[in-house]
Length: 290
Image 1 (cartoon, rainbow, N blue to C red):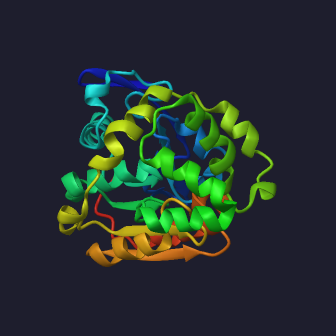
Image 2 (image 1 turned 30 degrees about the vertical axis):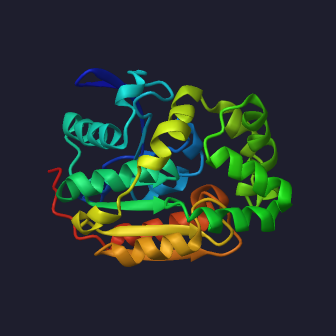
């Protein structure tokens, strides 16, 4: 399905009901909006990972501006603020009250930016493998996982080197190190093939956006309930960075998941979905669907 918001049309898919039969009444369920990473990937990275969430929540999968099946717009509007405001406009268009934004990796940057700008509009946020560690932290983990070659390739890639050599080397050498459980995910390779990528968004992130994300001075504005998930062996969104983020947010709870890399929902979906269920159960909802 698609919905027009302002200058563009966004693609979304819905799984699960907002109202479920419960004897003689209809039980209300919260709405979780899944925000993909990449940047430049699409919502399919969450399928079938979030299938079980529909037992206790409605899930909306959203392709962000510039990505997947949504309108591309242009690089001048590929910003954290615009993506965050798009999510709120999307919720306004569909009359979604108190959504919980679930963002993985760069999708978590969008969710966190939305909470900084529109915290009162949200039921909560779930930040999965979100806050990048300091460069020395990330490089040390990359070297521990993949040796000196992985460290050097990561250093050049993260510093924005724009050569064909480094664009080829990073996904070949470093990207496999994101996962600590590749053999436990038989759908992993097919999931990657299903993504409708916009490499222009990813390159725009590397050259422009990666260095512009600085939420630290504004984190006090995030008043909605927050859950942070961090993988023990994440070479990008490191555990020390997750701890710093948790300490800076007024209403955050942090879960460090053992033997997991980047993307807790992908790496350990059972544990992540159980934590999400508990998190949603602890929110005091004020909406009513009648």
